Amino acid sequence: MTKRVFSAFTASGHLTLGNFLGAMLPAVRLQDEADCVYAVADLHALTVKHDPARLRARTREMATMLLACGLDRSLVYIQSQVPAHTALAFLLESTAYFGEMRRMIQFKEKSAKQEEVRLSLLTYPALMAADILLHRAHFIPVGEDQRQHVELTRDLAIRFNRLYGETFTVPEAVHPPVAARVMDLTVPTSKMSKSDGSAAGTIYLLDPPADIHRKIMRAVTDTGTEVRYDPQDKPGVSNLLAMLAACSGQPVESLVYDGYGALKRDTAEAVVETLRPLQERHAELSSDQAELSRILAAGAERAADRTAGLMAAAREAIGLS
Ligand code: TYM
Image (cartoon, rainbow, N blue to C red; front, side, top):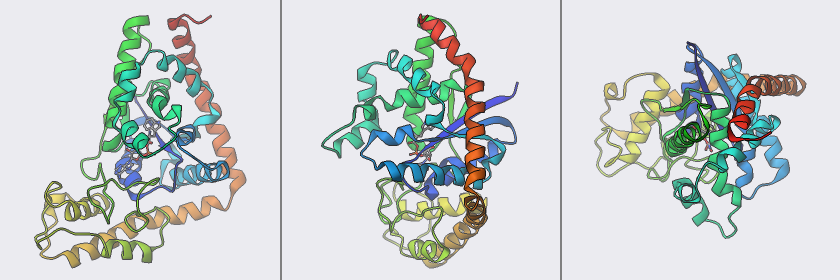
């Protein structure tokens, strides 16, 4: 049986190298063996303070980037254009418990940084579970930071199936062997993030080559000069080694350096070369906005068709008329 794959990207900022190595590249590779669906999660971007015009622009930029990185062989669409996502999310909010939502690490971290915490920040994992379960996905390519949300999705699927009858496929997260958690270049103990990282420590997929070189050459390294993959004791160097391994396709153990300078130069070069074709394709696709709108509208229509059956089954199972 063909396996189904789903993943999504929150339109909360410009896509980063973390998003690319943690989820986009694995997603591209899965296209050869599975039926893949990828979405721009614009609804998820409403969970924190946002600017409407910016959100709209970022959503399109992100969709363009997903197509540009090679996911144009998959079904790509914008989450909010398929209303079943929010409809199913409510059924899953009615399956989840307040206690388990409150325990989510991302909720705890993000809510601690804000005075006014939107209610959707708390319930967001139910929407993410809806995204996944709607597509009856088996595998979810994601970075390490989303592991807990996929675990919760599994719990909700199992609980719903037990309470109301077999309805959902229980999904599994898949992480890349290296670079499942790319760290900020200036603070290698924090995750590289599109929404709350430092500009100097974050490589954006559309950064010009000179910026990428500069950011990597200035990356914080660790005390001592030894180049060794050890994320605990040498987070800065290990982060560079992981980026280089993921971009060059070489196993991390085979990367031998006797100083930081050469490692940084090779890492910068590998990242620039990895992003070059993607940036070129992004420029091409951006020049035809009408075609982009057409692709996304067709994607949303197909996604709505494909998920209607599951939505009807979930409604029936839970007792809606
Ligand atoms: P988001 O938008 O924060 O990130 C998108 C994807 O990129 C991965 N990622 C990273 N991987 C490695 N290193 C990093 N520094 C790094 N930063 C981000 C994330 O793990 C993710 O795979 N809630 C999700 C979006 C979402 C989703 C879904 C994902 C909504 N619905 C359904 C999977 C399935 C999020 O905010 O990811």
